Image (tube, rainbow, N blue to C red; front, side, top):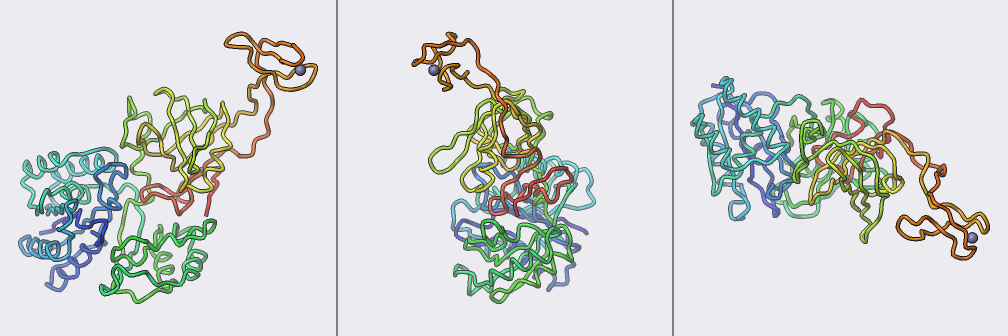
Length: 421
Ligand SMILES: [Zn+2]
């Protein structure tokens, strides 16, 4: 029987990684003569929910074998390697007959909701109960949500990531790698691979800093280019590696504004609006501005980690027409990308004094303007042409600030792309 195995929530902030557990389970299954078909799938879920796992990635893979034997291997792997002592680690695994179209349809809808919205553990239990899906639950079993979603998600778009894992004895120690070799790998294979490095910020993005078994990951659209990059980089000894198909870099989390009647926190959107309040910077280097949308005024933010992207945002002016992409948190859209559709070439300013030439000040609400020194007055603001420092088109955060799910501009078929590489 062909079975989709889904698993999630085996790691913690202190270590481990669900992709690694899946690789260990797959190796054991193969050793026992059970065939694993195609590449495992790495599914990133809604990045904004507060109780997410680190990286919020769930795993699935297709096997052909006896379900009891498969369950025993997966169960043994989780018991041995998952961070079960951490109270926030609540693993779950599911085993779904791949030929049961009715269940696969239900899981497909469930999965999209887990990527774009908020699902409860009760919804997962309901589906498992209703369709009698064989499963493994450890502790609270929150991982069952991701396990079901990883099995069900329809990859209407997907990318590839090859992950290299460290020798177990090196887990938790600093990673040893030749920085230049990652830049070289990018030079050779970009744009078929992306986010290996961040040239401007001089960061090797492919190498994580978390204490998990991952040594590095190469992302891209072309499996040959990904392999070439993989073979170009120089690092400490690799224990094992695996190629995953994934929804990373697809914008699958983004909901178009036409699909909703109101904006909610913990969801990610693409919203059009005109700039009503010019950007302002707060301590820490975070940049905020307001846009007027069909939902009312919406606050947008480019936080400090988005680096040079903030320089673009700071150049926005009242009247600019934009489309923002990002996640809503604390009633603020955290920008991942922006499309500047139209730039206002005129701004309204207080009139100049005809005698001394200085800008007049407001004489009070609805009382016009005045020059205190020359005693001149005027009634209305005037429009002046402004020189703009930015162009229309798409801008995105640099690779070092990119979210797993965000689609890099290099993958987007749109005109006027401004790519920070
Ligand atoms: Zn004056």
